[in-house]
Image (cartoon, rainbow over all chains, first blue to last red; front, top):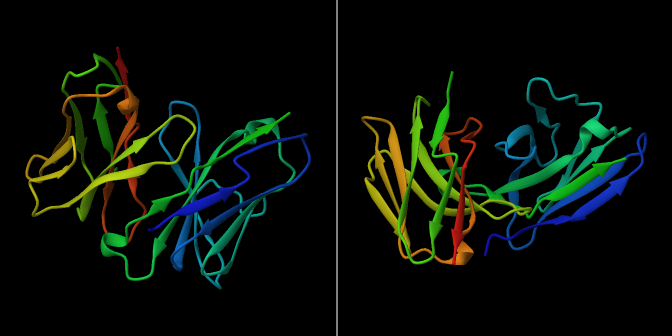
Length: 117
Length: 111
């Protein structure tokens, strides 16, 4: 149980284009979903927290107009990187917390490798 | 500033050997501490979660310990296997606030 999927697993795009990444909780309803970014040999950095039906809360330094988050249902959240640039190339990981989870445990997706040329 | 420090940064061991990874934290207040395994290019997978009242917790060949007084935790891996090669991340939670991640220890198990 508690499986989180991400799509796509890898994406390569040209600078200036927008990329959408999906995060789905496959066997549970997620009241809260989180988006992280991870650079090589670095720890996960929280970008934003989203609750179903409300606006996402962004961490300091994360541009909300560049990283659009939509948490349209209890099983789906999307991250859109708008006008992507090479410095946005990174490993993006989502996580989800099931409703009523003990210790607010987060289950992580497999990640999406974004490469911006 | 809430921090989680892990050591060593990287470790190479022979298959079948044991190893222990360390985690020191300054996060306060403290709710729980988690150890995750992250394979290269994959998302983290939970190994153990411990609250302040728990001193040790095992998950197969993985045993985590916690000393809430000294704010230290360790992850012991017994009889290592090649598939144990991964990054091991210590994560501390204050409760409902964002998790605080360590940078991880990169473990390589060689034949």
